[in-house]
Length: 631
Image 1 (tube, rainbow, N blue to C red):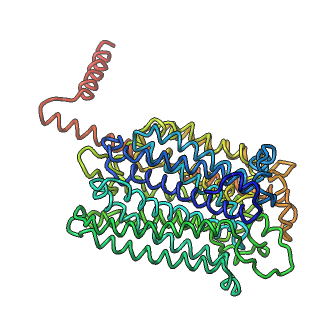
Image 2: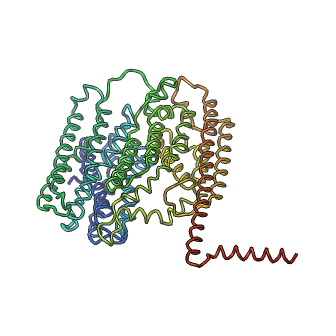
């Protein structure tokens, strides 16, 4: 172990060596945390939502791994400062310099955020008791792992959305894959036999994601011929070979699981293969650590500086026309990965229903994939590309994501499909994935979110917080900001239209009259926002679009006002359609209730017992007749 004194006296080679080692231990520890949380949340059985003794036994492993992760994250900040300054580690250990690095430098902010997440996970792992908390902590861990990715070497690649998105998918997939193998290796044999079949299915999905995302990311970094003769390329090739070997061993593991009975597993053979897999995976992680601290070979320079490429991560496109808006495509790998995952899960649910002999409505399937295609078009297609360069096209993409695509997705009833096809508990006391989803749908937090007033405030109120503050300009200047903004548009639209016209189960029964009032309020607020945008005398982007130096649509204020008009027109139409749909649902519910009352009346009449409503109506008729005779 290298002492801190030696590190302080050393030069840059020593700093680089410590950087690679700290990166390796940080990655390995965070992956171990992911694996343990994955096992507790999904692989091992629970007891009515409580973690099983086997899962609780892994908590100490998670706590130790989180402590190592936090220590490595802190060391990475220190080493990065020394590397940037070109100094020894002793000289970099200056509180003022480190404070400036983590508060003013984007990379430092992301690394500090990762450190905070690691500390948060360390504290929370000691208190874990329930599956729901384990799943939430797993999501937080993955977010912490991903944070520095947005300032990695991929951020300087030519196709920023493809490079960063593919790397995010690669990191998540490999964390789940390697972490799951680690968790299987450290759990007791009885729990392992229960967890292996479920992990085997997950491993197949993650292996595919690792290969596809890794290939896409390698192509964006090594996108010219001479790059493949560099040491960086040789390390990438070594990782590809190791991944292929891991996939082969994964295939052998699946063969080790009996098709007749997934609980019949050759544990001795499994343990042997797992040991080999862990050695290969550790080697792959070490290679990844080296790659993260070494930039890819630089492409030959054209001599021309493109401000759009350096700011937006995409080269400046030509002036938009109908052909370019239809056929332009620059893949946003992170969104594409999410859409592919959602599509695969939806198709899998339909297949499961078909195997049972049930049919899923074709119209709902059509609605789902129309929504998926609209999201892809608004993020990677023509309007997705031009949304980075002009406010008016950004507003079109915004309306597609927040107003149009959510209606199609909501009408496709994905939650209903999930409830009908997700796996149930393996034992009588286990909730399983389906039971966990049901518990989440009926939780207090869900009831808060589906409150129509809350949904309205998020749907329309957030527009003012985004566009009339400095938030919009800041988020447009980073890929994670732009991605978070698009996700917000989509989720807020899904929440709002789920409350208004949703066909999926809703823990809060919203009267139709309240829905109509909410829709009229949404229409008014949206119109007020659009008018305010159209009449604004200043730009709301904080200078972002001006910095791109685009040669077309040079009048930025006119383009912004056009965006406000587009938002007004495209926003009102979906709300009007939702209003019509609400009235239709209202009439249908009334007709259904009338038929129910009639059936109940007929049933009671056949039993010789009039129902209470019939008796009350007869009583009113008698009073009316008595009044008539009295007059």
